[in-house]
Length: 483
Image (cartoon, rainbow, N blue to C red; front, side, top):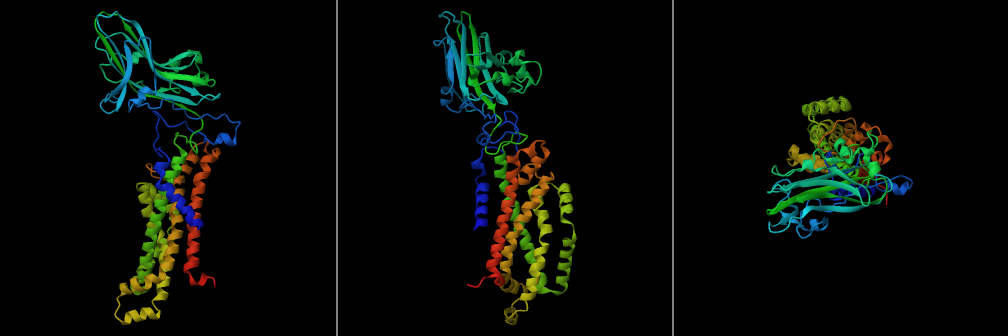
């Protein structure tokens, strides 16, 4: 029952991995990324309250403007409410023709009206940074499209400021000219670790790379504002109409803690790797066990019952595979062939059926001398009829036990191969997680990264061993207790 409970828990995790976590287990994203690298788990602060722990903050509730409510969730301010307003622009998103919508900041004045002069507007979001310890990094995005047929002088700045404190421009207007060229975005990305962003933040933060602007800008808790500031100089007498479209108004402030198990050296979520790694481990374990058992059973029963020359050929081939050192051969073949899970399953199947073949052969040699087999021969039963109808049912108890004990064989083999760096780059497994720990200098000190995959490998292997022992006690008459 304990073994079944453990397996059921892992099966549920494997089937619901995409529900349990929204992240990718293998994809490395930089622009923008999900979290900061080598982050601690969020529960770490409860075990060690004295640690300076900060978490991710995503202040913009709907950065991609998929519905009109996305504009309403932002703060729009202007010095001329009679001439400027903000609205949702459907089918005017970034990239052109693919985005669901955007925010449109529209200025309109007729020639008969007096020019407004300098008009300042902003579309932004004020958020609270609750930590007294600075974050590790921030990244931001914005896409701007300017419809300005009269070439009215316009300045667009992307700003990040502490409310009541100093206003910082993280990208400036020369990158957002009259948008005859279409949508424009900051390049490179707005990133506190990026040299360009540091330059825009100003030299007051120091010239050395260690003098991180983020540590001084987010020096304490408080309210901060991030958004787009637009300055328009309305001085001409003719009709004036300007529309500034804003999309992908995104900001993420990265803390040093993230998720249930933190992140690895590439800022990938470790819990996501654990959940999706369950799928790979179970697939490899189940398929390897099934194929090795089927092949070993077929070879063993055929050799044992038919005997003679067929027995000699099959058993000598089996003995040849048995004496081949499996570990070096697996390593060499995985390097030579395409390193993916299907290649691994194929190789482990070819090398792993031999032991059960000899066991099933010995059972077939014993069973073919039984009276019920002789009776079947007497009434005209053919060889394969007897094997399928009379021999096979009597060795099924061994089959169940072999299936249960062969699953750990596949899982553990995949784990140590991946730990050596031999794995499918498109999949994540528990062994590959341990490889990541090994290749990261600080990985061995991150016990929340090391322990979970190791425990999972041990637990799933133990569960099938327990089931194998239980089946053996149930199905083996010699082990049954008197009742």
